[in-house]
Image (cartoon, rainbow, N blue to C red; front, top):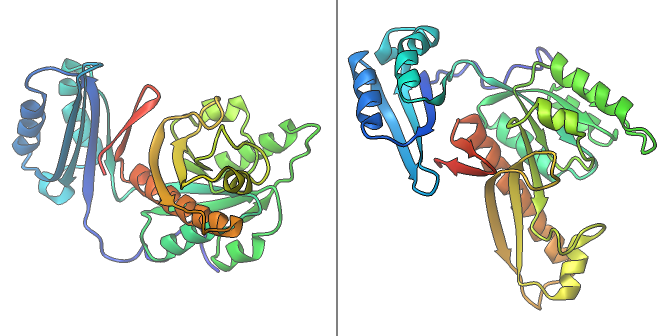
Length: 297
């Protein structure tokens, strides 16, 4: 079906932007200095967000700049901005929206998150190229290949998972992935993968952890009589389901709802929260600060 790494709407005319993202010690004059620098290059700022964390004394900033107004490449703009970054001890990045991120999706047997992301991708709601899908089961192959995306089946032997995850790492590297999304991938990534792709692996889990761990959490929650169902989208770390949170949401339930209702509501929340989290990540709206995030949504 053609080049699988190319988004179906890639040829559409889109505005060209640079995104400047900054984290640094909070000091007077940062906004003025950065804004004056951009203005001095003839740059037009189309979106600006700032946040000062009073507890840590850290400052966060995200600027979106119309690339055509600058008149220089992203590389040249980085070189010009570097002295200011050094002066204010910035952790920073400047991305070019014409350089689309390559994303690898990972899934097991539950399809709702994968189906939702594929729909949003074909509808041009996610600004990325889906380079591949990796799964420990064959269930999703026909769906994925129908979209023209490579599908890699990597079964995981419970007795020795290292072989499978060595292959997963090889496939991710071969796909030149910028980000990895665990779209209900029901295997725990080894520490080596968590460390190698720190800040680039996004996961989703239901809100019942740690109270209702294990099998059928929604049925456990039903028996407990919970009134809220939720989901959390977060970055993956070596500590299971405890990485920096990107997005969360909830759905109210009552005594009238059945266990199947709870499962249905939970799937709706999970796919919505994962899609939001991925979109914000792709748009450089998420800045990690320790085990927390600043999200300029």
